[in-house]
View (cartoon, helix red, strand yellow):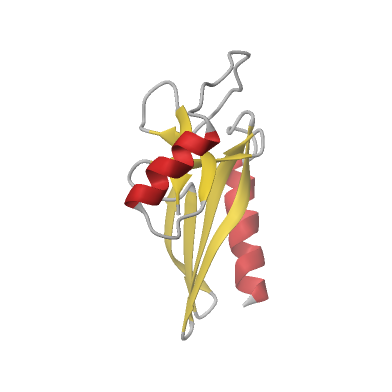
Amino acid sequence: MLEAVAGAQRLAFTLLRDVSGDAELYLSEIDNSNKRFTVSFDYAVGGTPLRFSDGSHAATVTIEDQTITEFSLHCRSYTLSDSPALLLPIRQAAAIADSQYLSAELHVCYDEHGADTVGVGWFAD
């Protein structure tokens, strides 16, 4: 399994390292079922995770029997802005999350909708 993850990481990082701007890739998920591994990577910008609105990942590599059988990639470039991002205060965000999501953990994420800019906000998981 470690070889599969390392190979998927090399592929994704090699393809995206020169085009992603201020973003960096990180390993976000490994799904291991039988001889099939799906390894997913996501972007973080300035240490803050970035989510795609459709729930997809920056890169996903599926490996079966040491062969890549599926590969998807969101090739994007991100640039940090000097403009401050306005967030709802944590107490208000927690109160809203508590009323809608039981036992959810709040964290800040960038939200990618495919437009020229991304939003930032609280996400409940």
